[in-house]
Structures are given as structure tokens and as C-alpha cells.
Length: 200
Image 1 (tube, rainbow, N blue to C red):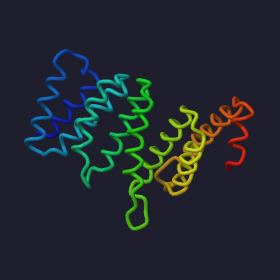
Image 2: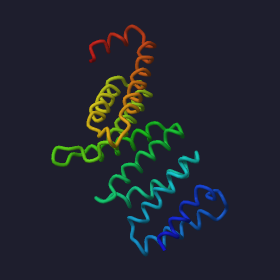
Image 3: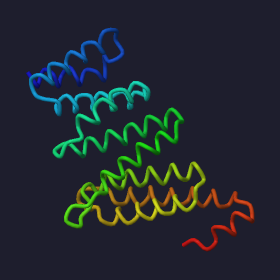
Image 4: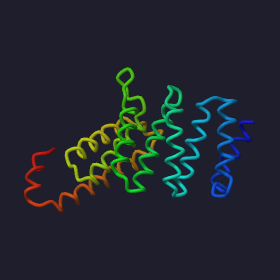
């Protein structure tokens, strides 16, 4: 039965715009919840939200990711819950609701960067959340918070396993972010430059 449910969910990428699919998907979620529990339903909602995000439907994605997040906020699915918050941040950014995007990214960062036995629980998700926070602070032209989140991103990147992650791409992304920050500084007036010249 779960295989059939997965197939119907995957078909949403191709037939999700057809009339009646949302109602069908709602029924799939109810069946999943009754047979396999709330966590499995949360995963379905999360994956549907990502489908919609990839199909440039941020408003619809917010609905499903928002329903998924509390259902996934359990020990065994905390990673998916963090990624759901990051997905909501992405959706808000696409809608140009940047303060809402920041709130979701901050929530993701707070959860991902919790430590267990002196180790960050979810370092890659923590890196993604910190990098998103840096981009948002840069958009708001808040220089000191940008630097703090940027440096945190760099620190976490050094903790990532090079066998699991494309470290060269991560370094390239961080260098691009630093370059955009440099462009912002070039546009500052002299008084603003004096305020930041003492920063590291």
C-alpha cells in the first residue's frame, strides 16, 4: 500500500496541476496518517511542498511545508523539519517577504545548530541556515549581522565531511557571498565606511 501511495505522490510532479489532484492528495495524507502515523503523513506533506517549490509555486508550497513542519518535529525526523523551515524561507524569499524568510531561516538555524556531546547535530542543515541568514542580512544591508552569520557559515563548512559534500562548491558559494558583500561596501558613503572600518 505504501508503494502505491509513493507512486501517487511522485505523480504530483506531472499531474499536480490537474483539477482534483489536491483533493486526491488530501485523501492520500489521511490514509497515510491512519495506517502509518503522523510522521509518515508529515513526510508526504514535506515532499509535496518541495514539488510545488520546484514548480515555482511558493504560496502553495508554504501551505504544505507549514503543515508538514510540526508533524516532523520529532527526534527521528528533525532533519526533515529543519529542511521544511528552510523550504518555507525559500518560498517567502521568492514572494519577496524577506522578514518572514528570515524568521524561518532563524528557526532552522536554531534547531540545526543545537549541540549534542559538543557536536553540532545537523551541520549541513546548519550551514544552509547560516548561509541563508547571511544572505538575508546582506539584503537588509545589516553589516555586522551579515559578518557574524558569514563567519559562522565558514566555520561550519570546515566541519563538513568532504566525502559526503562538495566542499569546492561550498567554498565557491561562500566566496560569491563575500564578493557581493564587497560590492555593497563599494556603494557605502564615507561616513558608513568609517563605521565598519574597524570590523574584522
